[in-house]
Image (tube, rainbow, N blue to C red):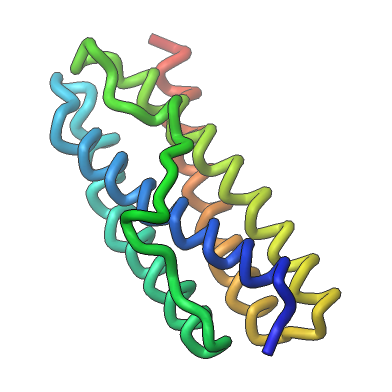
Length: 151
């Protein structure tokens, strides 16, 4: 068993990953324009990785005799990642992804700390693994943002 803080963070991270899947998928569908193609392809690829994160978090909750949140428990938080009114506004999507990645990075850092404090090395290892993926996503989208600043 682990402590309440670890469970709370695992459940929040699970919900955040599910919300990210929804927003990445929607943005990968609605963005228009030739310049949007590389960002759309990246978002499509990241959908599966974010879904895998949610599955890992859900499985860890199950191992801890807890359950992942369901839709009735869901509270949307990713305001900046909502699809733009202008479907060619790729920069707003990039900025939304960067906001979401920063939030995820902080979430996993908090989870690592909580798991360490709770003497829960399995959750700590899981959070470190996912943190690495989130930092890689942030790096990729920082690159996209730099390219769009040059235009």
